[in-house]
Structures are given as C-alpha cells and as structure tokens.
Image (tube, rainbow, N blue to C red):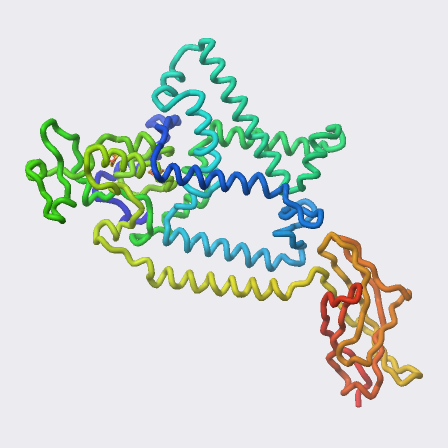
Length: 490
Ligand code: SF4
Ligand code: SF4
C-alpha cells in the first residue's frame, strides 16, 4: 500500500491484520447490523445480482443454455453464441479486457467492486449475515449467545442457522454446476440414480461443503488474506483513487462530546454560522469525530477506517452509513467518512482524469475494438482448406487444371450442417469431392475430407493463383475461404 494513502496517525495497526490476535489466533468478527442509505442501495443491488445469478441458467435460446462454461467438454456459450477451443484468442483478449478494466476501475474507484458486486461479499454480507442477524440477533446478542452455555435455545438457534447456511451452500453449488454442465444435467444428477452421475454428484457435494466453509467459517478471511485482487490494491491505488475514506482533516483531533459543549463544525465557519457553542468547541480544539467507534463496530473486516486506507477494506460503505447516522444525531454535516480520494480530502479537489487513467482507458478501448472486430469476423463453422502437400497441378482433357485439397470443418454450434462448396473467385471453377458426397458436419463436431478444385486453364494467371471458395449450407453462405491454386508455369 502506498505510504501516502493514510492520515498521519499511529502506523502500528499495519503490523498485523485486524482479525488475528497477538498469539496468532483468529479474532471472530461480530459486525453490528448496518442500516442506512448505502446499505439499502446494496440490498437492492444484491436482489438484482441474485436474480441474474440464479436466473441465467434457466434461460434457453432455441433449446440451448444462454450461458454455459463447460470446461470439461470445451463447450462455451455466451449470450446464446457458441465458442470452441478455436476461439481461444477471443477468450484471451476478453480476459485481457477484463484485467485492464479491473485495473482501470480500481485506479479510479478503488475497491468498490469488492463491497458492491463481488459474489463473495454479496452472499456473505447480504445473504448469510442477514440470516445470522435474523436468528442470532445483532452483534451484542451474537457475542452473548456464543459465550452462553449450551441451552435448548442455543442448540435450536445453532442447528437451524447451520442447516439454512448449508442449504444455501447446496443451492449455490447446484447453480455453479449449472453454469458448467448445464441445468438439464444438474436436474439429471438430482433426479436419476447416483450411480449414473457419480462424478457430478461428488462435485455437487464438494462444492456444497466448499461454499458452506467459505460463508460459515472463512468469511472475511477470503477478502483479507486469500483473494489476489485484494492483495493487488497496494500497486493500483494512489492518492487520486476514490476509496471509502475518513476525512481526517475535518475529523481530527477526535474526542468524545463533553457535557454542555458542542464540538467544532467547520462547515459553520465556512458559512459564517458559527454559534457560541461552536466557539466554545474551537477552544476545545476537537474535530468532528466523536470517537463513538460505530464505524469500527459495523465493519465486516474489523478495521478502523480512521487509520487510513487499508488492504482489508472492501469498500462496503457500512461505516459511511454508521457515521452519517452519528453526524445526523450530533447535528454535524454528513460525510465525515465518504467516498473520496486522499487528494480530495487534503486539497479539497480531485482530478480523476490523469495520465495514468487516460493510458489505461486508451488500452482498454483498443482491446475492446480489437475484440469486436475479431468477433464480427468469426463464423459458427470454421473451415480450413489446404492444398495437399507434395502434389503438383494436373491438366485435364476438358481444358481445366485441377488441384487436390484437404478440408477440415469445425462446427461450433448445436446444429448439424450439410455443406456445399461454390467457387467465388474465379466463378468458373468447379469441385469434385473425393467420395462423391457433400460433407455433413455434426453439432459440436468436425468433418474432414479431400476435394479437387478445377479451374479452366484460361482463367489462371500463372503458377500461383489466389482463389476464394464459398462454403454454403441450405443456400446460405456460412464462410469464405481464401487459398492458393497452382496452375502450369507459363
Ligand atoms: S462513526 Fe464517525 S464519529 Fe464515530 S468514531 Fe467513526 S468516524 Fe468518528
Ligand atoms: S472500513 Fe468501512 S468500507 Fe471498509 S470494510 Fe470496513 S465498513 Fe466496509
């Protein structure tokens, strides 16, 4: 983490992570239930996310999944379009776009993705944690219950909570599998005898336990110690990046409200509304932070954001809601913790457009254009037409010259194609397929064979000629192939 991204307070908190004590033991986090404007936005966004995540595997286009990432059979469908191993270059560019986008997004908006869109946070904070609040109560009740002896009430709460946790893990696991093998296959694994789908059944069990452990036990440890994206923050953030930040200029020196004294309100100075209470507080030399520690209590990663930007912060904005509520109660301006950059806090201004963000945007746009161009050139059936090596051209009695070719067709779709060849350039060329039958290429399969191309001698320009072959199915052009044709050397 850049040493610039913090306020000038004690740096000892950086020596250890917030969830580990001095003896190396994990400190279990009991975050206070967050409420407020940003929490509500996140809840609504999580509904949208969950509808999309659980709904997508049910969507079919012409009987095919709308999305499928079948790594095992190397069959990928994105928005109803089939992709095969031959399209790996598109996949590689898409991954590069994603990487540059993540870097660009992080450089400008910090780790906002983690707190608002990442499935780990959505499930942890907006599904599992809310169930926990509903069963065990808020953070103090949870701590009390954990410390309490095993009574009937505690057993009922524990068993019901863990059962619901595991049921949701099974649901996530099945959905995850539906993205890999398709919904129909998942239904078969559930309905048919286990012996027929042993591999799928084992995967279902393994994933279910993995998700259960992640959300019931590992929790914030995934974000603070396991996730590589979180570890990269140190090199991606700078003083211009927007992050959840504590306004230490306005907040410090922090201090509890003392009876009969109201603490400073810099906004009042700016507007000339300074009251007698405010003047008293100026003498008190305290900032707007009343040191209530609510921002720490609501933090799901257990950090004190007042120490400055930290790797553990997932930008969930819970502390912003907590602090805004406090500021409202003590009649001070909201936004003591807000989304801002260090430059925005110290200089009261922030330039999001800087050489680094311009450079990343340029690379990102270039990659997107490249992907769109390559995608538009891609066809559902890939055809390779190569002259058979070691053979010369042959002159026929009818005045044509023939060359022997090998063809290979790769069908990336779930339809079967009956193919025909037509000469496009020169149009007078004809075909003679070895074996006599037009090739049929089955769904997600390939077809290979050989054919002769015959071109009238007068149409050839010399030894090496460029020709264009059209590959058709049911009268529709599927793809065009450019290749070379050898004629007699003049
Ligand atoms: S919630 Fe706000 S006022 Fe309370 S400790 Fe945190 S920053 Fe200070
Ligand atoms: S510091 Fe604030 S934004 Fe960061 S993880 Fe904690 S509560 Fe969320």
